[in-house]
Structure formats: structure tokens, C-alpha cells
Amino acid sequence: MGKTIAEKILSNHANLSLKALDVAVCDVDFCYSQDGTSTLVIDSFNAFNEGQNKNPFPKYHMVIDHSAPSPSQSISRVHDKMRKFCKQYNLVCHDIGEGVCHEVIANQADVLPGQLICGADSHTCTLGAFGAFATGMGSTDIALILSSGGKNWFKVPESIKINLHNKLPKGVYAKDLVLYIAGMLKADGCTYKCLEYHGKGVNTLSMDARFTVSNMSVEVGAKAGIFMPDDITFEWLNKRERLNKHFTKSEFKDCYPDSDATYWKEIDIDLEKIVPQIAKPHRVDNTCEVTKVLGTKIDQVFIGTCTNGRLEDLRIASKILENQKVNAETRLIIAPASKDIYIKAIKEGIINILVRAGGCVITPGCGPCVGTHSGVPAKGENVLSTANRNFKGRMGNPDSYIYLASPATAAYSSIKGKISDPREIYK
Image (cartoon, rainbow, N blue to C red; front, side, top):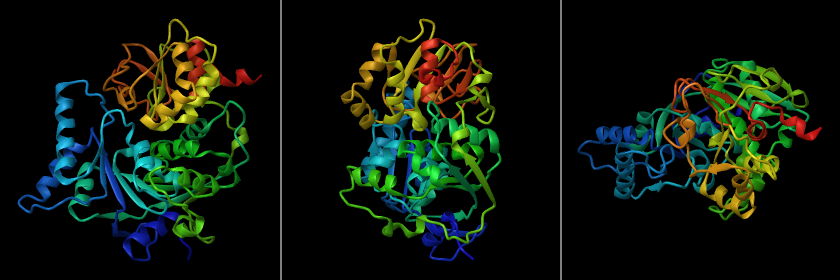
């Protein structure tokens, strides 16, 4: 019987032949945490190793992104604790301004397809876009990896095969696709499953688009969301500045399922039929076509996050906002996902366009998305965001209302001051 990608990767890391629902101890290739989770990682590691003077697993990075720069004394103490821990053990700490952990790790760490990657952040599944089994877990689990020399136990998930056909129409983007999937499968529809993305439609999605889709796999309960490496993946890998090496498909045999692999479910999606989507408050799976909520007044628009703060997203927004102005009654906040993206967006003139249109560009990081700083809405305000979650209080105020959309819908709506259909631009 053949194996899925998840079965192959976890089997390889356990040195056993594993099938779905098996449990095994696996060797982790890389792990990381951020400033919202690192304190417990440090405390747990110290508790596990009290009196042993043990060094932590070296393939571990910390990222300061959720509250960067620090908005309070208490957060400053957290950041100080992280810096001192990394200095003590000669670990990498990506400090303020480097960007959102998932984007930073993808581009600045030695992570590759076929690897087992764990992060103390639920959206670690983002890295499945290049063919890794990447999954989020609790801080104490990360501390266990650090204490055990890079090991933890895993239950092999059953897999769902999603076949993508054709190509997204103009004005429709990866965020619309993944919101459509969330509305179809629901928040608990894939609990502890692995999503595998197949079909010729995958070839039409850029790496930035794939990161968006993998990122939100957890919003339907999935443990991981994996794309198989192809020419687009290898082009991205071979441009990555950190690793000066040319990668080919033959090096990553465990990133492809067997033809006779067994799937829990198989789903077909025609990309041509996808239209711009909106997730209404206060659930990610509370989705509808944009036409159902046209005209909804928007007080604030946020473009950024680990879902849609990449260069492609900023390009899309800038093309819409060029020679335009943000509505006088709407605020537009933009957070590039990383410093590297910020610099590239400056060089391309993207930032100039966004600022001239009335946008406010903030430090790369997670602040507005998680509601720690840099964009907490007022009571009763409506926010249109490119983030991955719109739970009650997500952006820092339980009395505001968050709608989710693509960067195109967000940018166009910021001009109109109300939820609008970006396809109007292409008529």
C-alpha cells in the first residue's frame, strides 16, 4: 500500500514504516518560537533540565514579531529574556523589524522540502508550501524538542487530497481560494488531517500564493497543508540567499505521494469558478461571495500578516492604489511580512505608491493582526483585513468587527470606504 506525503515524511523521520494514525517518535529538523510563546519554551526547558546544564537542540530560532517594537514594559522583559537565552546558548534570535516568524524562517533558516518543522505558533503550517511537513505545537512541546536533542512524538495524520483545476480569474487570488475552502470544509472539517494540494491548477499558483493557502490550512483544523515541489518551488529555493546551492527534484523523493496512496477524502475545485470571498465576523469559515456584503462601511483596512504581507500582495495592492486615494473615512495600515520584503517594496516603488495613497506603513511584524499594538480598532468599527483570523477581539477590541479578504479586495475597498468587488477594475 502506497503512502501519502505526510506518511512518507514522518516515516523517514522515525526510521519506521508508518501509516495514518500510527504514533511514533520522530527526529525534528528545525523548530522555532516567537515572543508570544518563547517565555514558556524557556521556562519549560529550564524545568526539564534543572541541574543538568544541558545545551538545547541547536536547530532552533526565536523571532520577535508579535509585539515589535515593544509596546510595554512587560513585553520588553519578554524580549530581554529571549535575547539573553539565545546569547547564553549561541542560538539565533531574529530581533525587532526582521518580520513575521514564518516568513523569516522560510527565507533565513536552513529549512527544506521533506523536512519535519515544528513551531510554537499555529501558522507554522505556512512552510508546507515548499513541501515540508510543518506544524504548530505548544511551547512545552518545543521545549521537549530542545531538551531531547530534537525529538518529539507524532501521530501520523490522515490526508485529504485537494485537486485544483484550471486557473483563477482576474481579480481573484489565493486568499479567495483558501477562504472558499474554509467555507466549504468549516473550522473543524479537517481536524488533525493533512491537506495535500494536487492538480494542474497548482502550477498557476506562485510561491507567495502557495504560502497563503498553506498558512490557512490550520483554519479548517488541519495539522499541515503541503504542496509538492515543482519548477516554481525550485526556482524559489535556488534564489534563496542563505543557501548557495542548486536544488533538483531528485533530492526530495519523500515530498511526493505514491500513486496508490490512501486518502481520507478527495476534493475537486475548479479555480475558474472561484470569486472574491469575504469571511464575516467572527469566524473564518463564515464566508460568502463579496457580492453578498457590498457596501458594508469599512473604518480600517489592514494589509499584511503571515498570510498576505508578501511582495506579491503588496504589488497587487499598489497597482490598485496607484494614483488613487484612500477614502477620507477609512484608515489603511500596511505591514510588510519581513524586512527583506520591505526593502524590495521600497526599491520597486511600491511603498511610495502606498504612502502617497494615504497608507500608513508600519514595522514588519504581527502587531495589528494579534491586537498587541499598531492598529487596535475602536468600539463598533469594521475592519477589512488580509489576516488569517477574525475571531472576536482578534485585533485587540472585542467590540469591533473583522472581515477577511484578499489584498486586492482590501486595497480597492480602502479607496471606496466600503466593501467592494475588485473585479470592477478589470471590466
